[in-house]
Length: 68
Image (cartoon, rainbow, N blue to C red; front, top):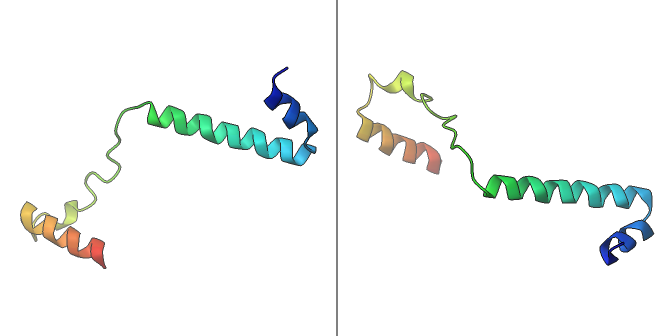
């Protein structure tokens, strides 16, 4: 048994659960950092404005909105 395992066993059950949750979080972060397909969830979000603005104007507007 490793030193870490021994230390965890000394904790009360609720803190052992916190350790387990934290380790799961770290593992999820590691997988996300390892890479993956980029998602474009924002794609088409400004589609309704395409007739009102050119793409460049829309970029400027989006920057203005972002700053608000």
